[in-house]
Length: 506
Image (cartoon, one colour):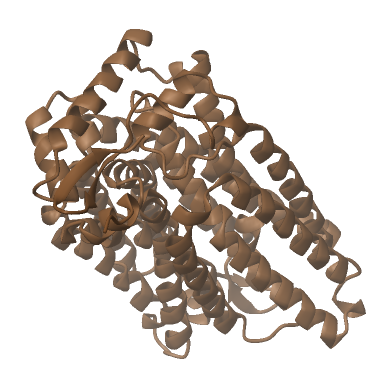
């Protein structure tokens, strides 16, 4: 009896593909870890006593506004530099070597952070380096996962970037919560030192991971690409045929556009369309409110009178991990475009409801309204982590052209973190002026996200990267992607019947 190619493909994949699922994205956990502990540690009395300045008004030590701004803002600057610098590293040295470099940068940053005594400047230098490593990971991981994944698993594998952000954030907030009553500086130093587990996991796993077959083909290393494909698909997989497809497509792209420069991402009409989708999805992922929720949820909860904000931070990341696990199990079945459309409407409704509940300030809120606001916030976070959070990274892995993939992925990461940087700096002042009504702004941006998705984002579920390239080159309309019949074959997958054979999927 013949089984479906997709099911059989997953069942017969070698163990290395599952190592890729876990360890190919683990560097992103370090970035999520650092994001998770920073906002909590700023409220740590031990951290404030060590680095804060004496406030004559309150007669207590406190971090100045400048210290808080530098600690948060410079981290985002480090990410942006890392994303921008990660592109040439990724392009020249390959995905695997770039992750080695990323792990080394993060390790140096952690050493600088964890050995600080009283110098806040030294602490910031370490923090910038850790975030810079996070930026390099942002430019490498989506490309690496997307290029190594079979099409039946590409959504799940590309989505692991966001999933590990949640895993890292969860463990960071949990450590801060458990260590909050330690009387010494170890109340905050434990979580800083614990970050070293992430690059250590990379050092252990990277020797076992193959290089991206697409990158090897782009460098003319065809024999190595065949070996890498067989490591990822199985020893009997006809990798030569897929390498030939990759090589043919790359040559067509090179004939069409000789130079793969940054300008080509915008000057060439096909590349420009793909850049708009990749960068736009990242911008709207941030603009709908995740930077507000991730960085200012504690302030928001305190403003409406909620207690145990550190515990709630842990709960939020548990919700995020659960949502990402559901996403990884369903995304290659339900697709991309419709999920983004429906979730934009839901996210907008949740934010507008939060704005309505908190519009008149905490004094006018009953206990029931406080609970409702917190529930809406948790539902928003669950919905976001089930949809836009990971799907933006999936599109970043799927949509860019092979010819300018490194540059498009870097532009996408910069779009995300520049948007986040603006929100981090602007939101506190806006929230001071209009309070909970700031949620109306994010709700309105969800409406804009719906329009963006309707106009630009195609459905690319269960399409090979070669087929996606073909549809963009043929300028297939956005809403016709789902039903379009490609000339280029899809991934080659195994179908069992009387014996075993491989077929090319149309």
